[in-house]
Length: 312
Image (cartoon, rainbow, N blue to C red; front, side):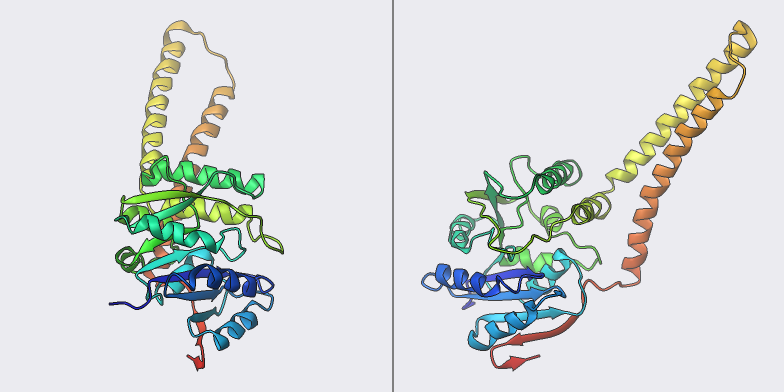
């Protein structure tokens, strides 16, 4: 039987001033209840995050530090940590204390009722309007592309059981999206209400680019619906072109009611050229990602893994 009940995997980026507070909050919340391990994955931070992580590993045998050679993105960093995790359950959370460790037991109490995944749902999100908007749009897109249940919020704060983790880490593509992988594996999902806290200190790492990356991972990585939309749009455009052709031929030969000039031609060229370019762009995105996957673009590259009194 596994002696580690909960593994906590946290991607770290430029959070050196929070790391020790984060560890203290986790230890205070879990020490009396569970055996656990804390896996901190440094995603090539530009500050002293890695030095702070190494300090924690020296004094705490249940803390593991993973240092990536280059910034690989949150989901790639999570995969690096999940492949090391040994717990019966694995908690994923952010490094800024907006996801407070005191709610880990709440997530654990919910998932042990037989669920594969339990998400934390925040009634009030203490983050920027831009971040909320991006999150909501991606959530709606997930409903369309990946059949996400409408009532489930794809929170970055969640707990996953070991059997589901063992399936997630099999993902070999260069563009992982953890929630997308989860939704392709299981529908046995629940969520619990918890409070969302203010960031402890520093500046958040959210950006519109990051939200766009999530969108394109969903759009081209976990569904062929965009290709079908492009196909259907092409068919509709073709049928519309045929109908217009008959109309213009009829006007030319029978009613003589037509306007000489290039207006109609120009409009048609603009509309159909736009549709063609849009379809080619979608197809090209798929082909580009397939090319990188076939050529084994790495998900991440680990510089070192450190444990208490042990360097690998």
